[in-house]
Length: 457
Image (cartoon, rainbow, N blue to C red; front, side, top):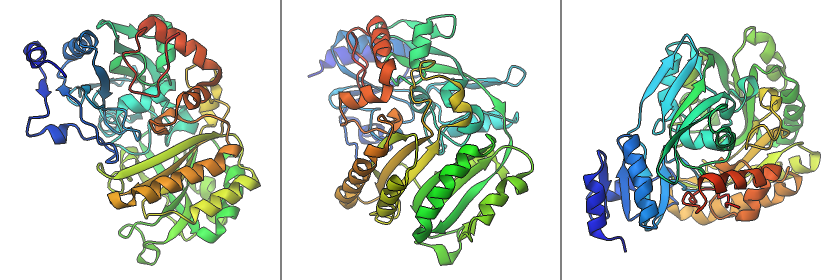
């Protein structure tokens, strides 16, 4: 049990608030995005600044407490919280500063991507990020960062210039190409294994308006669509990104009433270039589609499209894999499981990882799968806890059926916390040994282990 006197001493040294189980807002403070994750930390510290973070790391180490770090709280596996430990909650670290001349943006560790998009969009800039604006900057970045701009500008980590990190010994360092280059390498895909990142410096890119939206086809055409998509997207100009999905059309605007509740297959597009009519001509011609909802809109609006559909507090169980090729045999399995989505919010996405993401070699960053063409995620989702057995069984069965056709490892941001050491090793391949050596240097006692853990050796 945590000594109350020690907690009182901790509270006296902090600017931020300490939340304990007896506090009236404890159950709100302990929540994360995925409602399937129901953890009870002994103490939550809502840090106000870097000094608070440093003190919390020292406290966890001195008291031998399990330590978790919460940024946006969006991680599907619930790796921003823990039972009977200390949670460093970064949500109050919200500073963002854009330098439009240098085309950089400095972002504190508690920000979400929607907040970053708001700040950068004013200058006609964007940082490659995910597809939901409520996602935390820290978690998505440290795992790699797949999203709408991957084919044009690479992964999020490919735009990461430096990071300020509180290490396991409580000290603060800056990691970049010149300072602590081994740590800088490891942070770009190695997850939260090496410390608490309190700020990120990103290169920003010219993105203002995009031509984007979904194209839906009937579910019975899924095999044809997947065969067309696998050839089309890898040869498309890098300005065009499009992730394939199985989904159920939401029952509301802007979708036509005739499609409400209908299971479909489709691609969600994002085009950053000019002459959109010519680029999308082959898409419209492959059909006829049920819906071709592509139009011009601000990039932050695209990033926020899924926010209302997938709010915090729903049940999630997901599995993931990297994919090099979509064989006909794999497509047959996709068609089978896509037709069997157990709830209206369950889905499967195939995110492209080619284009600019392929410019880096597998060993250039901790994120190893530079030779993959897609990242697949099999996500069972429901607002109803009674659906947990069904969404879990479907996600696991879907993943198991497609894994023989995969590249072997998975995107660590889309792994659950029960997949084991072998799965983590497979997801880093030849980079694992180097990551373990960096871990030994910066966190030899594995203080930061509430993550897809890399053990020090």
